[in-house]
Length: 402
Ligand SMILES: Cc1cc2nc3c(=O)[nH]c(=O)nc-3n(C[C@H](O)[C@H](O)[C@H](O)COP(=O)(O)OP(=O)(O)OC[C@H]3O[C@@H](n4cnc5c(N)ncnc54)[C@H](O)[C@@H]3O)c2cc1C
Image (cartoon, rainbow, N blue to C red):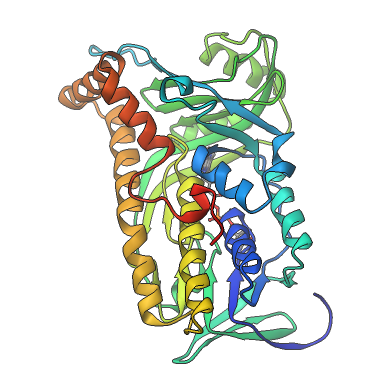
């Protein structure tokens, strides 16, 4: 949808075409809700996403997964190695998906492939798309007006999927709590000599995790959490030097490593919106919460936001109710709170236990990993909770349409 001045109306506008926004828009369009996507064309993103089993089920339910599969690598096992030089070190712990009856904990996929599969499905469903950013969002009593270059859209509900610097969130008057960490993530992809055996390996270091996650073939994605100066210095190195340094830090577990083009540097922070919805705006993904890239939580939470919201909105639509009404938004906020807060807390605690020089905290982390290694029921409960969180199982994550 392009060209000319437009004054459009729709039931719902989704602002932002990252994965959380696209999943929301596709789920609503598939449910017959009059939906409009307002999003500029995607930019280069060399990151990858470890999609946990529930997210994969949601993508399959909406007909998106077949286009992802050829570029997705299964995560059949996870190894955690304490690579700190500290007095109290945790034992190495390994988990396999087979222990809880799963083929894989999930799949790792490059964001560019995930985005292409989402856009392909949106096109198949003929989702109306304004290929421009929203320039203003105005909340009124009976609706929301979203402005973009060349026109406006008047809707009952705006879904703010516009990322960390969300203008939708600001328009709804929703503040955030934010704390920056003294850490930066360096993210890149590599090719290597030996197979990764579908195993994700996480080295815990004093500056944060160094996590290698399988990609298809003899390739792996790396998220390396460092102090900001070291991250900047490594990111500026020529390919050959950086490859050698990464291989050294990875203890050569996959043999010789060669970094691919495209490196990303991400300062780490944790941020949570004070409310996930208000004034006819509902927030999904990083507009609602940002967590550090530790333990593959961020987008998995974002996709659960999208699935939960789509379910509530589709239900209101089927009952001929106002999809942006306060009770719909109130239910959304209530349904997402426990999941988002518990995951944010867990990621924050793990990260802090690595950074601290406080021996008791190091001991607690070591003890937790020791118990996870030795106590079977606890291990299996934690693994199941990671893959299918008790606090949030929206329909799409259970294989049902919204
Ligand atoms: C290094 C790294 C590794 C990660 N690995 C994982 C992982 O393995 N598993 C996991 O679950 N999560 C992971 N995450 C987190 C994950 O990448 C994010 O949670 C996810 O990208 C957020 O998706 P989103 O759709 O909410 O936001 P975004 O992807 O940020 O998309 C927001 C979109 O909104 C658009 N936008 C902004 N302003 C406007 C506007 N005014 N109008 C219209 N559009 C607008 C932007 O162009 C963008 O396309 C990782 C993060 C990092 C930094």
